[in-house]
Length: 275
Ligand code: 5FU
Image (cartoon, rainbow, N blue to C red):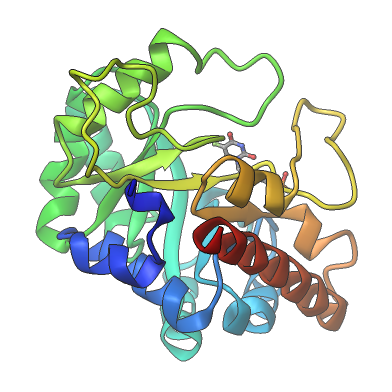
């Protein structure tokens, strides 16, 4: 059977990359394929939301550069919460420069992403050198990389040949590239039987998930957890505004919405693996 029909726990044993293993084990342990994207500008809101949803998620996704009052102590608090609530950290940095520059952006600067984020991501647009630049920093630390093979936005250029080439780049660097940001399963994607490897098992993390609305005014497009996990074979649903909403102070409502997404995501996984 193709790997994505296997249980998360079985897939964890097949991965060598520590970040991939950790994510699959965490999903299994917590019965949650929900990742919450905490896209807020104040660190007090950031930490309060993470503390509220932490028990319900496998992963917290950050955009660390949108915090207005960032300091290095915030990272200590984030890491403490990740231990307290047992979740993986994914900084959604979307690196897209030459190898030498992305290595510096990943290791250094104000945010020092590689020192605290288990997983980060990159656009394939520069070619394989973006992977080798990031791997030089991340592999010794046991980190993992996702390639942006597709995006959730209207009119995205990440499609067709570009997406296929992203899969080829990942295959040639599978020690560090653990999967994709994509809208569907990528294994063996349209590349013909000679290229498809039946036992490959890339993780598919999928943004653009919402239950109440179909999109926003800025090109975002939403699908339901069932469409993403069961119908399209993705592994993790990434939800931002659908969970944190518009009233950031109402953490109880935020927690309740997270639980609803967790339940729907898990039910969709059970249907996929048990049918
Ligand atoms: F790569 C992508 C993508 O294709 N779509 C996205 O929406 C990333 N994202 C991120 O997921 C985006 O930067 C937000 O951080 C998050 C989605 O937030 P939402 O509030 O659920 O729309």
